[in-house]
Length: 179
Image 1: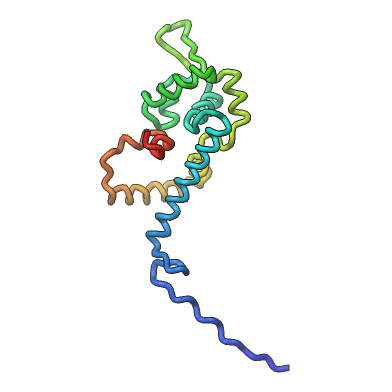
Image 2: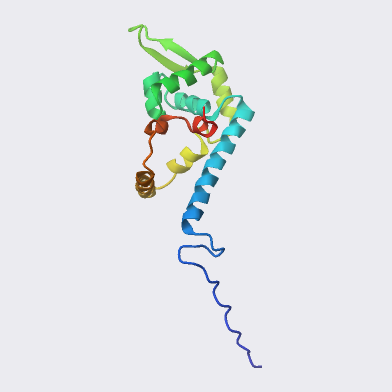
């Protein structure tokens, strides 16, 4: 039996720096940023529909469960947000009876925050990850990958020359919804 050899199909011609469909690499990366942002936005929407609070408020509950008796400034540092922004988040959670403020018996000026029983129940039934998909995905990357990503994003930002670096401390849902 003789075998007939077929010539291999020629490789598709692509431009350097483009995928098989011809999409230039910078557009491929931009599309991934769009997908990341949209996925985070959808997660925030899902959280709000399911819990009645936004994703950032859910993150506050998560942090208070992990580290009870934090003050607002410690919470702001743990979430890399402005203290005033975190104060507003906490006020809403206190009003909803999901968080309580506890004054120190030693120093009446010192106030710590604790998650309430209602807050714990809400957190238990909340969509996961409670700290948000983007944060958790970054948290799970190997350290060397995070350093690399951080450096590359720094280069992108260096070329963009951002004028509002304070936005780095705004919750992502606020940036996405322009609040």
